[in-house]
Image (cartoon, rainbow, N blue to C red; front, side, top):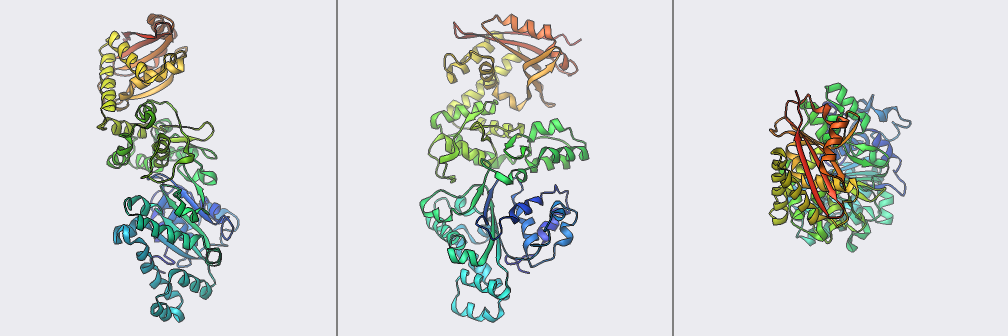
Length: 529
């Protein structure tokens, strides 16, 4: 048993000692590809989505350096046919690229890999060990010697595979050397077939789209844009979250509000696993995103204004879907050329969820919405900063029932972001209002189509527990007086569901005149006695 060659199963054993959501069926999916033309697999996911868990699980299953039968007993994979066929039957190479970079530096990744692997490979072929050392044998030759000596091919499991590309931002030589290593291992027609049974690479980004790396294109890639058969292993599914909520006494709808929203074809709605588990362990929901990481990851892109990107980000925070074409993104953080590149990158980073069926992306849940809003609010770009300040002021105007000021604030957002005929339907008007009130993300939970009385209110803003602001219900109309919106709120009893809140409740009617292109607003307080 080595550290990098045929490691043990301690990593997965540690995971199982904590609360574990069974994702071992992923093994069965990858198992189908071994020794086939599809044996090179790259699965990319955002941070906090269990990439390392999957890597440790695969190592424990395939490595011939340990006996993992007892670890998988009772788990889903053990119930499948052929479970024991590949259990601990392969030579395994396990690499965590961020760990190697931290220890040896990003410029020395390739020579460090050889220095780490060759001594352990020699131990598997004692008769050839002296020759390896004496002749300075190359890595590929050492791997082939091991296969011939043991009769076992290799399964490569590489975690954070893209770290050298992301961290060697200005070091093209280091990036090229790493690309050459990947090409040597996973492209050679003779070597790859002879020595490698399969490879599972996982990281944040798919394979880079550069001519000098085209030789690594044999990988089947499964991403947040196209997850394929790995969709249900990206995060927690609805049924898995319901079981966790029942076990820990959490409200399913509340957990969905905070962490749901990654719509992946083949899996339905997928939840962010790290945050769900934190909510379970702490017994309450909230934002468990690492704020510093979020801001630092986004800051360079927020400052860019490709084709109105900044306005789009604000609208996304407010709940609007964004059109995005991910086809031309080079899967490289440093090669941002157009707005679609930024939006596609945000999908890969987990800040947006991509809907393949209609080509749109949207903010998936409240946790991400809060972090995006903070990043935008912290932007040094004057336009974004001004928009957030205006939105905060607009919330104050609503709370203080300044009707003319509210109408004027909504009008500014309409004039700044929309075409003249944009508000000729309720859905478009709703988008304008939500954008104008984007700063509400800090103090409010926003509920669209709030059920109450004899129908549904257009939008309701419910203050979070620590907020001192009033609740308010918004009804939207066009080509009618603002009083008509308030009349509908009262007549249909929309705010009845809010009477049990221990805060003031405001009724807000907003209208748009398609002839004058102007908004009007009426606000009154609900009598909660």
